[in-house]
Image (cartoon, rainbow, N blue to C red):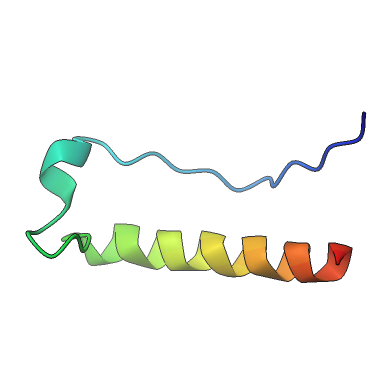
Length: 49
């Protein structure tokens, strides 16, 4: 079975407090890391397609 592991990872500490009522991350640095990770994920998926 083949697999692909993205080397990036992150944790959202105190996740119950990390989001506002609209579901957006309140910490801009964390939001930036999430966007960066998502971009890498999409890029990798496109290369595999």
